[in-house]
Image (cartoon, rainbow, N blue to C red; front, side, top):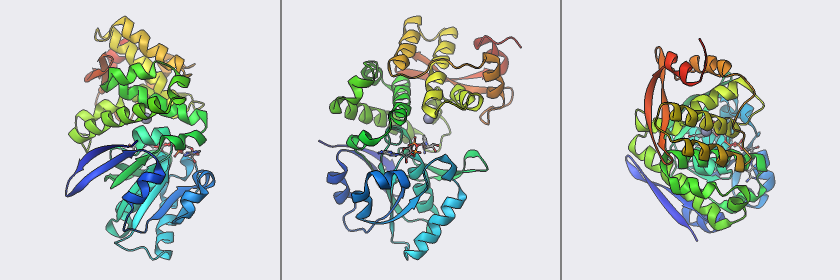
Length: 344
Ligand SMILES: NC(=O)c1ccc[n+]([C@@H]2O[C@H](COP(=O)([O-])OP(=O)(O)OC[C@H]3O[C@@H](n4cnc5c(N)ncnc54)[C@H](O)[C@@H]3O)[C@@H](O)[C@H]2O)c1
Ligand SMILES: [Zn+2]
């Protein structure tokens, strides 16, 4: 069984996202091209047969490799491979590999075609969809990059079997976020808990599909993030503050905490019901995700105040109206402090 979601692109055919077996989807999607694969050490070790089928460039794993040195390494390897304007780059990996591959393909010789096989749940439901590519600079996340969508993305749920549970939970936090902003049905699927989702391939495929559909529809409305795309930041404003204040958390864990705080703020603003707020927290708990962090609200607030997305004396904040529906509010820092129960 396969499922295809298409996102329109300006000037070329749609970007196609295929949920199904990589062995079935990839030959069809790469017919007539001789892709050069970009992957990382871990994915190359887990899928030697798939990667070995193509010429390939292997980068180190981890966020510390998402930088301009790795880009230079890739450009040089592409020159060695005699890649030209007609070459096709295929990123096989998680969000780091897809962000890097998209940027390398967008810039090498002013742009070559590219596609992804997304191998983490986070890459499948989030990073590989939406056309944001790029790398970090001097420790600042995603400082250099561009918007450009791949020809295709393959999401094979079976590839998640080799993924460490901690990484799976990161993707689940993003899928819960997608449900919260766009689909009560998706959220309800995820309320059933970790095993109910991960041990049932049909439920897992449906979760991936519905999360992608939400992101795809938001992105189609606002490709370059001037308006509606901001709602994808739900749970991330406080999530980023959590990441900054307690480094022991993964991005997904920080997002889970951020979603719970944002649900609390939505409640205090009078939009979200108490019952829905409780559902958000208990869904995270059932997925084994944290809902609180050990640092004080004051510390989180100070981190927020220095967030790069602040704007004057306040910031845009995504609030929930109900599960599956949200909007953006502009909140002054004074009001935010009140809502976070911080005494200034
Ligand atoms: N472009 C976007 O819109 C967007 C959105 C969200 C996140 N991101 C970016 O995505 C990155 C995080 O992505 P991620 O969580 O996928 O991290 P990742 O790419 O580092 O993958 C996590 C780990 O899992 C390993 N791995 C990948 N697939 C595997 C598999 N099938 N089996 C076993 N191991 C596997 C990787 O080697 C890595 O060690 C961040 O850099 C973030 O900025 C981008
Ligand atoms: Zn995220």
